[in-house]
Amino acid sequence: FVERLTALTDAEDAPAKPLVILTMRDDFRKYLAPELKQATDDDQRHQFVSEMTRAELRQVIVEPAKQAGRVFAEDFVDDLIAQTEQCQGVLPLLEVALQRLWDAMQHDLRVAPEEAFAQIGGLGGALTQQAQRVYAESDDAAQTVTQRLFVSLTQLDPENTHFLRQRTVSLAQIPVARQHPQIAQAIIERFAAKDIRFLTISSSASHETTVELTHDILL
Image 1 (cartoon, rainbow, N blue to C red):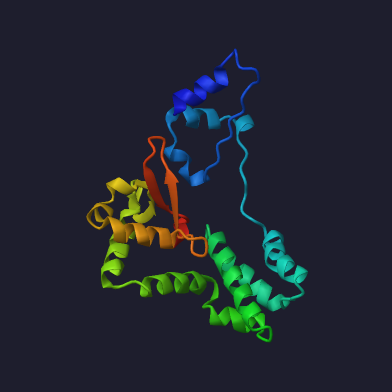
Image 2 (image 1 turned 45 degrees about the vertical axis):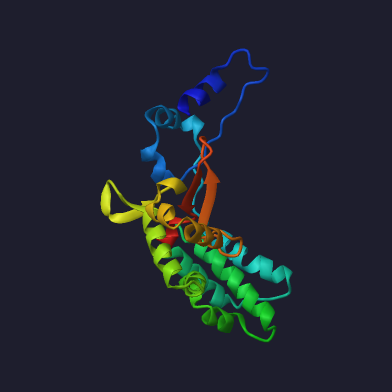
């Protein structure tokens, strides 16, 4: 992969100079191949995207509701921002919580945002409720496969064995998927559905199906 990228950018006979843009989380840079890490060490070749400021978080929370004619109380917004700032990489939780909050408010136009937020379990509860709902809909065999499947998608960080991190795994390399292919496939498709998006399904360069946790906050 690195060799092909290098050949592409160094090609002198190319009609136009290709521009390669790589995006990744900063804490994953240590896992880059040496050639790519050396290239990204150049200050002129990388751009860090910082975490959202309080003003940006407020805009994300308030403006969509405002455009739909709903107004959130300042205290409620301040509390939600404070919860968001307490955890790193919490934006996926905020996204799910705001979607569930909006669904609850649309279901009952009389319910106050604060009440609806409490009903969905708050910032972390919204995601937990989704996971528990999908899990509870499965029979005993599917629940066992689900547990083993999610364990297969994590690994200990080699530099800090107290923390788990995501793995992108070929479906063919997951033992429980080989043992129970139909059940595992159904579970993966359900957790990768648009309304859940706990899992991301991709295709590798060798055309193998790969699976990974969509967000490490799920760990």
